[in-house]
Length: 230
Image (cartoon, rainbow, N blue to C red; front, side, top):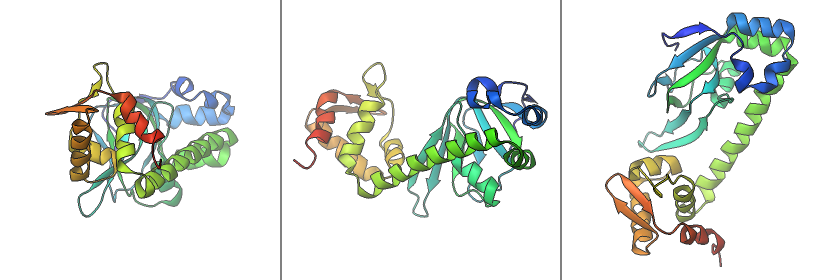
């Protein structure tokens, strides 16, 4: 999927991907010629489950949320792609020519460079620098995915929720969010999140209101980790 606002890539990738500044001259020429710089509005679905992958996306600015929905309807955020990063799922789909197994959504307005599948494969074959960047990003993201699997499979939901609330506080000391959104972020059911939030509220750790969770005692939430198993 290519949005309407598209132009040649130029050298826009240098700032976001400094490792590519030493790209071989012929590879630079190919990236400039084949890369399309584009603007994507917030909320755009970049890819869906079952769709083919046609482009390798190099994100210059903004955030893409990659999420999966089970047959039961439960959702989980797998990871986010930020500026200077690439999507591990897109890389895998391009290399294996498989369909997407998750959904990617523009969480903010995006600026990116789209590189067609043929140009992507040509750069992989031609440029050691490009290969290093692609596989380094792939490896880093894969480790993050393994940590997510470990947390969802074995981590205590109260500890994970407490850490998420503390880490994502805004300037007012809370989060504008819903119980369902938190459940998606943590890969659990909304009822589980609601039950745990009410327990946090009973203990004075948070204050709940419609569409907002106020963090009243972040130190107490973090202390849950320190006392885990004690």
